[in-house]
Image (cartoon, rainbow, N blue to C red; front, side):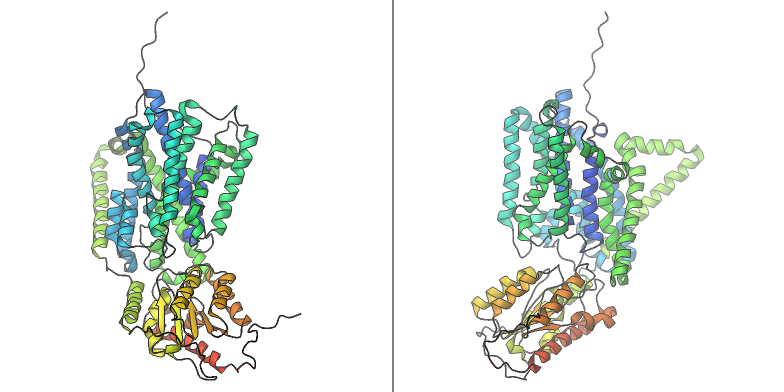
Length: 622
């Protein structure tokens, strides 16, 4: 018998490694993120799709490294990084060049900070650059064109460091020790997120690789637990046992995407870690041979989205930002807001499909040089020179357009100019540290500025000069990205300092849904001796109608609560607002101050109560 010739160890081909249903998990992740961004307010927890991606990436990368070690006896770091570059860089380069050039033509706010964003994209350091620049993930004032690339930076940093750790440590220790090390890393990252969390702005813990790496680590833990040395889970866990848990995990992820807004402290105190664990359970259920869940998630339409999820994620946010800048009036009405999101989705899907077909797949399979040779070899010889010339001119034009866009950065966005003017007005006013006089104003006499404490968000900041003119001496405490959940804490601080005045103006409805219990808590805190004015909101956000309805209903219930109807007052003058349709210049500020003035006057016009201890709520109908 002739002996078989020796075979050369071969690195596993990542393109041939596939877990049935995993593309469905990817599809779920990208769908939640896309809806979260393209139709604001519709899916308040859609940001958690990024954490689903992190778990999938940690699982796949660790699995590929372990399979290569098992099949060849070694791990080629150079080969791994080349495969990652082929997978990620081509689509990213096309995105940067096309959207950077498009930004030049759109102009305005989309150019702000573009140079830093491009540098962050090409060096995979976007998350740390955003942190260093103080850019908030939750700030809609100047939406960075490439803001979504922060998560790609986290993953690329993982791709750089994790193989080194696997080669240097993990392959040299037993399986139980691997699990211990990876588990400790996951727990440490999640605990560090909770420890470092700041309710004023959680951007640092959300963007930070150190605080947001637990999803990647949990995915790696799953790979070692179930797949090292070819171990599966058949024979140990029945598919009828694990599949229901996987289905429940996916339903729980959808439920969290619906009900878990990003401003809740619980998100950073274990909520995102829970998302990662649920994702790991769902992936584990896919690994059972013959899994019904895997078959359901492997349906062709779902799989189509999943395999193109990288391109869809890359394109959806820049396309939406560019369209919002080019068509600012589309964000004024609910119908056109949905149309804007729908148009962005169509362009995103087309761009992602073209990128996958003509850029990502050829280069991933054949490499950069082989793909270029194939393209030019297919053309007849006389056309090759023309093709090369046209291609080089196109790349040069896009690169030039992107460079000009970076050079055209105005430094500050339109809304940011208005906000900073308001902050300067507040900083330039004389601070009044005199303890507040809790005696109510005389009946029939409107409150003056020295009797009013105003607490608000960036819209109030933009209105600060006009409020100071209308109410000299008013105390304004306003900040970017605030929402109603922060109101009790701010009121408590002013109460403790003795600076909360007789009339409290509360304007915190712009940046997210509100809870009636928060309003009730604030009213109880200020007591019956003070009056409360709630200012409704104007913004192209899905939660605004609900916010305004809640504020109007709350103001109707209590005699000492009044609504400042900023929303209705500004509707005839939306053209005076900034492109974001949230902030405004002097004309809008005057209208804002006018709405507050009318509310102050209505409070003063109320007749006095016979009994100061009377219940200020309206009678409950029988």
